[in-house]
Length: 237
Image (cartoon, rainbow, N blue to C red; front, side, top):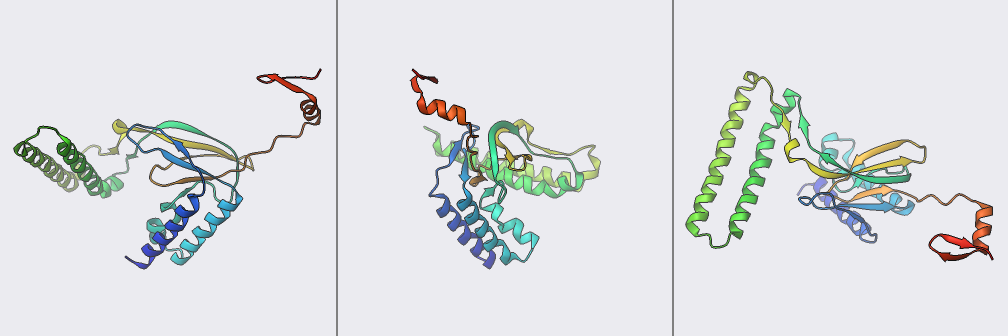
């Protein structure tokens, strides 16, 4: 394990230990996905997380490749560090990936193949292992078919890469596998509004301080003298 990876893992342990003292909101979006965990950070937690981010990334000396691989955003999705939000709400929406640029598509073909092959093989083998009354011969035959399907996909991937210009259009798009994801819409103290997707792979943290009620002397005086008879009904006799 390299120096940067060791540092990354050390900071990750500190972050998770820090967050263990807080209770997150669990935001369930899709039956096929783990829920997103959202933590509300007060100023103390915001400051501690900001310190850990600096402690980690100052060691990278602005090396963008290292930051991309081992940066703080690979540990926790800190939505608005140092910029307190005065309000926010969660919206559930469909999300999928789409890559249209031919150069990017060509570069990502093998990565897409590897991700699909690993997931397909793992899921298929797990389902076979759980199959009741399946004979060893049947399982062995099915696993051979799975391996053959992956081999066919590798051949097709090579064909596409070697003859890329022969195709009228090639895209990477997961719309038919779109899932529901949580999106957080929030407003900062300067009234600027933003939205970001919540991660299901790591904790999400929003720096949020709930606004105090606006002062209303007449109402406060009434409530101090009134009796709550039911629901939101108050009376002064």
